[in-house]
Amino acid sequence: MRATAPILAAALLAAAAPAWTTPAWANPARDSLLNAYAAQAKAEDPAFTGFSAERGEALFRTRWAGGDERTPACTACHTEDPRQAGRNAKTGRPIEPVAVSVTSDRFTDEDKVEKQFRRDCDSVLGRACTAREKGDYITFMKGQ
Amino acid sequence: MRRLLIVAPLLLGSVPALTPVAALADDDWVPPVTDAVTRAECGSCHMAFQPAFLPAASWRVMMGTLKDHFGDDASLPPETTAHIAAYLEANAADSPRGMGRKYLRRLGPDAAPQRITEMRWFVHEHDFPDRVWKRPDVVTRSNCAACHRGAEQGLYEDD
Image (cartoon, rainbow over all chains, first blue to last red; front, side, top):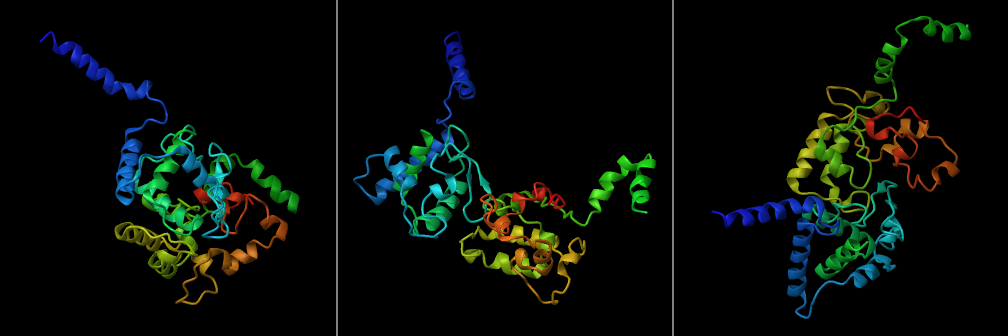
């Protein structure tokens, strides 16, 4: 009985922790999404060893010019600085910053993330993104 | 005469109370999108345009062609598409509520226009020089909110 008290207290602390100790980039939903992309990346390429923020940044800044001419790069809508608000280059609609440090719920809703990658990769790269590319991109934005 | 007309309302104590009613009855107010799914999905790349701007036939065609939505693949899961289509059609310009009848003037009964910005009344009311359309925050004619700050709420008189 006496032994369970500290364990209970620890469990309660752990449950309460996200509210006040978790940094903005740590989010269980985002982590599980990244894990799913990692498993998929591994399945697509057995040599896959992990995501890279550097590759994510390169993906973000490259002028692919493979899709819609109004969106040659991610930066066409999101600006060169992911911490800044952007603007949809086709519709003019304002876009919240992609950087997780500014918009903390980015990449936490799998359906939304998948829908956005499907539309944006098609528009910018002119093809679907691979699981590795998606994970790299999110990893870059997590550090921004 | 003109001065008299302006002064007259000031003499009426009830003017402030009448103002909201006048705003609602205004020609430039369109019922805003109240359905959460429609607002979220249609509003994810552009403003969720008010259904009263187009007849039901337009929305039917549009929701059936999301795979090529003005050049973009905007397709959604079938149940989401059906939900949004039902909402848009129920609140369309020619719906029983009739809130958008004025936008249908000179349209044939079977017309299903897809671009609000190409409708006669729109072109007539937006006869601006090129420099206005080329403002960097405008981007495209369908970006209502660039000039109409209350567009999302259906308020279009602030031009």
